[in-house]
Image (tube, rainbow, N blue to C red; front, side, top):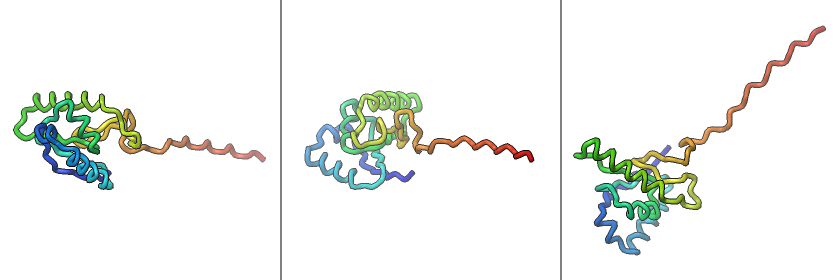
Length: 129
């Protein structure tokens, strides 16, 4: 699967001060990319900003891990996951929620849909003469 990584490095302060014009420009840019887009963040987003990022067109959020201990990062991922579960899917989107750190989560479906498996056909019985 090919994805695009957009290094926005948004912080909560940036998202709080985002104007309608800036939001529209970011959304237009994200919609113009032909691949699912991961958006890098400078810090874990506040609960209200998660929905904003999804509506902006982010298909995945990349949290910063540098200088963060494992327990704190785990708590941030858990909180982000809970917030993403509350965000409804876009009508034309095939997945139910945005992924975390580039992992797509499709409401219980695998990342790539596999065709249904065909059962092998039974061998014909030999004809008796």
